[in-house]
Image (cartoon, rainbow, N blue to C red; front, side, top):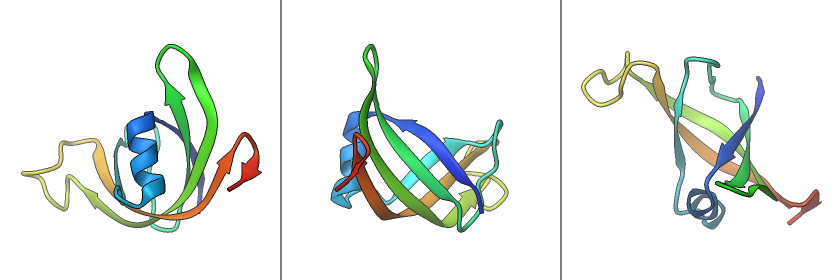
Length: 93
């Protein structure tokens, strides 16, 4: 299992934290994701950078191009995620 640090825009970050967004669509050309991996989603604002808020999620299912060629472009994966922890500027919330 691997831990990946990934940037995420504020509107998507908040949707994950609120439990409304339970998936991530990510490119897999520079890394491969596996069930059981942990993602540290780091809230990031264009122009100002990281906000200090983070959310840890576990990858619980993966759908790739090979699984659904008509719906997922080559090199992308849809990751089903479950929140396992939240932090704001290093403090667990």
